[in-house]
Image 1 (spheres, helix red, strand yellow):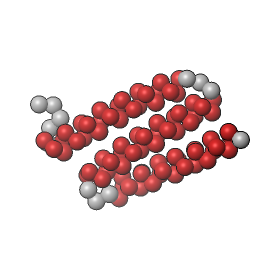
Image 2 (spheres, helix red, strand yellow):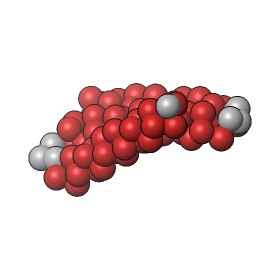
Image 3 (cartoon, rainbow, N blue to C red):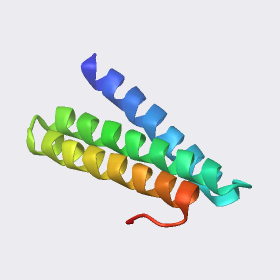
Image 4 (cartoon, rainbow, N blue to C red):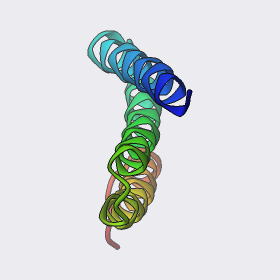
Length: 89
């Protein structure tokens, strides 16, 4: 039964990732693209965690934590670039 739930979750997060990719390609504004990229990071973290659950290993959880930290830093850097025009003062 858990296998069916995992397949359903793979389908949901995979389709959400594709929809975010479409939004990145067709968004009219830079802010919309940044939000779509941030959501893509969250969906890829969810897919990594699901894959780790499927295989039963902990290494994918650590990779998800690293990607979460990088996603947060990149979102903050994009936001600072939009607000101020530079990232490092």
